[in-house]
Amino acid sequence: MGTVFSSILPNHEEFIRNQQIFFVGSAPLSAGGHVNISPKGHDVLRIFSPTEVAYLDLTGSGNETSAHLKDNGRITFMFVAFEGPPMILRLYGRGKVILPGTHEWDDIAKHFDILPGARQIIKAKIETVKTSCGFSVPFYSYNGERDMLQQWATNKSEHDLEEYRKKKNSISMDGIVTPIGESIANINKV
Image 1 (tube, rainbow, N blue to C red):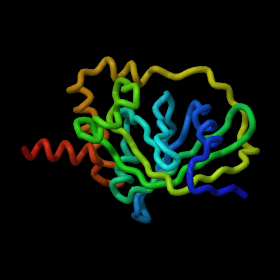
Image 2: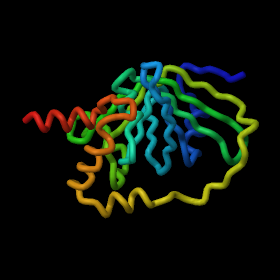
Image 3: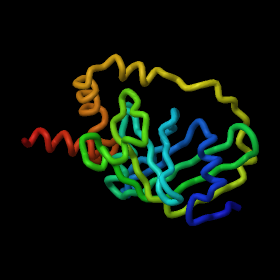
Image 4: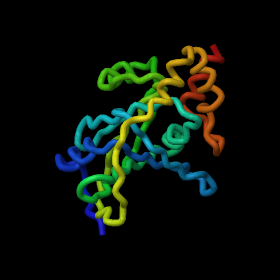
């Protein structure tokens, strides 16, 4: 049985900072919608307070988390010890999408190394922290980051990235328009 906390404690923060990968889970409110789980690498997560975290989200082939946050705000982060003592730590909260070109982006982006292909920042207010044993999680060794996504983004112009996001990141697999999609629609109205 896991242990529940109302905020991120110092030992949780240390554990989170030591992980090389984390997972983000979200789902739409509709019963037939898809649950999404996305792995995140690189040094993209920031802890702003015991109840507030954010991560720099890079351009990818989908944008489900963004759509789900627009739909209902629910988000779960999961961190797993693949080395050292076993533990699983989950952060449950409500998140939102922060897009480049906004005042909020200007305020928060300075806390990140903006990587090639950065498309948005996901910010979450944490309501519950839960730890569990992780006794059945196997050991894996960290060998380094893959740089393929950053190389891909570096080889694209800003216009190419915008066109890719328009095509691949504007609508979720369940038909939910993402904040990127809304932003594109608003630009097209002008």
